[in-house]
Amino acid sequence: MLVYIHGFNSSPASNTYHKLKALFADAQALEYPSEGLFADNMTLLCQQVELLKAAATTPLVFVGSSLGGFYTSQVAPLFSANCMLINPAIRPAQSLRQFLGRNTYFHSGRHWEFTETICNSYQNFCDRRAAPIERLVVIGRNDTTLDPEEGRQYWQNHAIIHETDDAHSIESIDAVMQASLNRWLHLG
Image 1 (cartoon, helix red, strand yellow):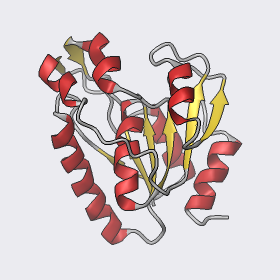
Image 2 (cartoon, one colour; image 1 turned 180 degrees about the vertical axis):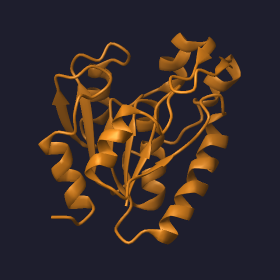
Image 3 (cartoon, one colour; image 1 turned 90 degrees about the vertical axis):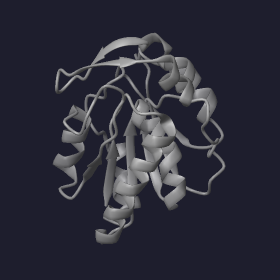
Image 4 (cartoon, one colour; image 1 turned 120 degrees about the vertical axis):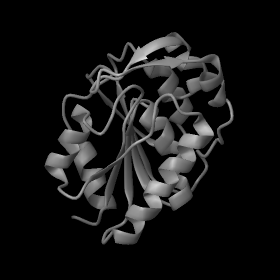
């Protein structure tokens, strides 16, 4: 079962999830509030995964985009699941600082405040790169939200890195991405 985790200020209504859902009809999306503390969001995401795991008929495979890629890097190893990280945030306590203050959810238009406390909560993550799972890290060479070079450096010895000419949002699920997902889901 493909499980998607959305990015900062996003939701399961994201374009990336819709692209995945078009290819994998049973894909499921997890939800977390961007205004949540890291530890609370981890608990919430893991609870949702436990519910999906009980109903899964194929292996769990995670896909996460941006901050969802960071969460995927944290959650997937806990379930011994392979994953695809799309332009993943690397050190959110630093990279999210640019969003301190008032924010707006892309899909609902709801406003909320991103505080120092929320941002600092991301300092307390575990480095799970050594976990024995397969990872495909998709890096958009034209990403201006996150630094592509930081992603390359961070993941270079722990994942297959697949670069595209995309910006922060991917235009499509290309053949390399789809082949990895199919293999992990045992679809061919």
